[in-house]
Image (tube, rainbow, N blue to C red; front, top):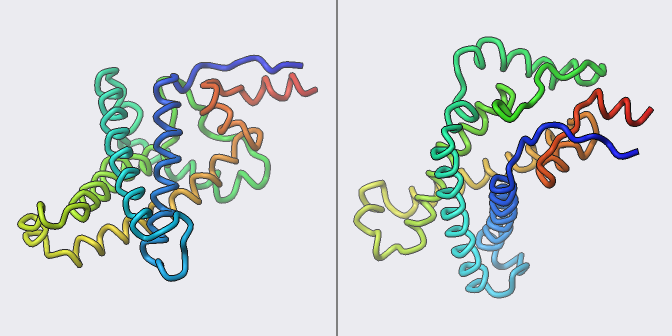
Length: 216
């Protein structure tokens, strides 16, 4: 029996952005690994080819980020979806942490149910705020500076030199890599293993109660 649809959580624009962003970031991580270990890894051919692909992917992420930011600003959803409030820190994050690290394993229901007006729980909101407003912008800026050392030489020197910029870029890249692993894991914690993945493909996420009723 076909499961009834829930509410549209992710418009087509956001779904396209998400998958372009996800694929580009994943490839940036892989090409970045080859750039760090060129003598051991040749996944993308020569070192020069890996550098060129890494640069192209970086600009795709930059362009994609501008589209994402513009969409949420124009639709006036940025603050409501991504900016955590006081209750998120005092109530939401402790409650969600207790669920993720304890109650989940005893089969308790999730304390948060996404809606089009509030798609992310408190932990997600705080994490995505840090990722999208701190980590990605700094990672992008350092990447652009490293892309053309000659052009940006004065700014690079003002910020501490190439080694400082490169260190920031690499450290943030490690954090992004760790986030991707955790992000994929948490994406499996819906009422079914693929529920969250499916929602980001079709836009709808079926409600847990409906799923149980249709499956019975």
